[in-house]
Image (cartoon, rainbow, N blue to C red; front, side, top):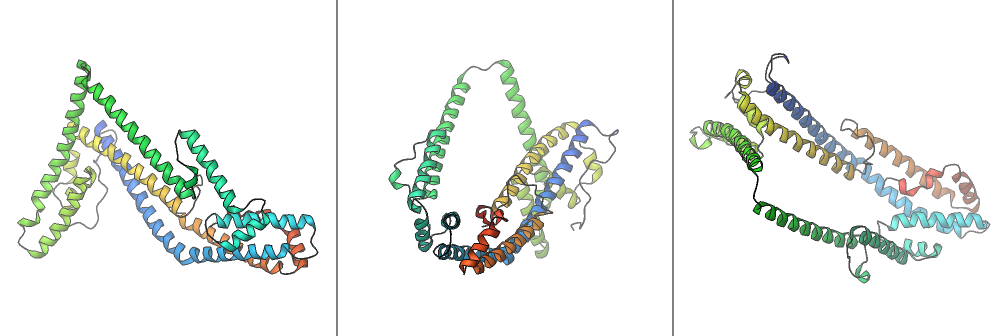
Length: 373
């Protein structure tokens, strides 16, 4: 039967008694364990944050959008009230254009577009088109792309689609050139040193594959469910074989060794007696696994930041991710309360003047681009 708890896989002994290869093995196994633990922590954090986002933040975001739209209408009505100075009306118009523009960038709303156009020197659609053309020009100049006719460019999504197509075309061309270069290089006569190096690399690769295959065969031979007559035991062995096959497909040496240890096909004394030549191959595999786990960890963190709109430059750990989301929730609650108070203040000319005066003392309140939307 399987053991419920296992100590971390290590070659026993202190630093003085271990060889260089054994020390490397232990160090890399420890790295892999830390990276696994970090990935597991991100998985827990992602689940907790997604639940909190759905339960608490998403409703607040919907309320915030509704309040923003109401605020644009409130500012529009306030600008038309009597008794305001030219400077006060200009401030209101600037606020309307900033807030309506930020909403329209992500949401279609014809009423807001009409209000925007009334208070801006240029209409929203024309300004949006000019911005798209400007971005298109930058793409073409920086990357040397030809993004096609301006007439069909009507959205940022279309611009990115064209840019992506050009990136793929450029990459395909680069890959073709690289392949052609490698083919030309392969045809050139190689020196004895190059041939010797290639032979060593091929031999090392073959030894690595052979090391993993040998462990896999031992496990598969002992656990193959087709040889089991007991139905319950066959189910158990089938599940184990699935784990073994997955580890073998990923060339995951450490997981295969752990399965051997878990199933008592080897013990820790056996691991400590691995010869130096085998250790050399094992360490090469473990080094590759460390690199792959580091890349996966980076992708997971980047995906988390994108999902919850967290700055790529801010300090973030899975242990504190929920607290970061809590902070954003509280900030959004305060922002929504302030917008409700603002709407009430904009109902009368006297309230509008007092609100504009108070607004100068809290400039961050109108920095709509920094709001969490």
